[in-house]
Length: 235
Image 1 (cartoon, one colour):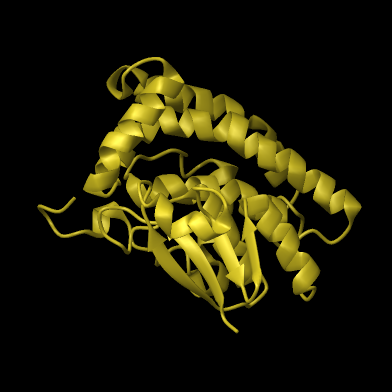
Image 2 (image 1 turned 120 degrees about the horizontal axis):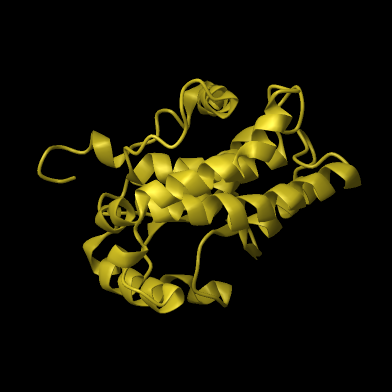
């Protein structure tokens, strides 16, 4: 029975930008598992009613329904043990650190930089929901929250630990990518799909790592549709 992943999509169904969904797609590719992805929008809560919650990613594997990107990655390692994502308890502890690092240090800086591009990339039916929920979260309008100069400065500082690690190895997990790499890289895929913003200088060791990650699995991520690929007038 095939795996099915409910995957957040934008104003074109081909635009798949959720960093949490990208974590799962990277994990599946790492294991060589094929998956059917089904586009989903923020306001389409009924489509996920079977899962008992209202957000993606949701992975369906036969009778198993698994929610939350990190829980899905752990499920994949238990159920499909070949090509492990975590390896051992030390690798999982490292991955958990990078999960929180991506969510609490990198994502806020990137969001401040690209939020108006992200709004534009959303399906029109999702924009009111997105604006209302995020402005409530931030306590200000999206326009006031948006500050590319501040976001880029914040991101530059947040990348220092990653630069240190990548000075030692090609990947966060060492000689080859695994869970920690996917947890961090998915955040950059989020920005890559919805925005043309240059987040990292090409002289930065993080840039070289991003290029290596884009080339994995036959360039799967490099080939992923982006807003900049849409026809003029639809961007």
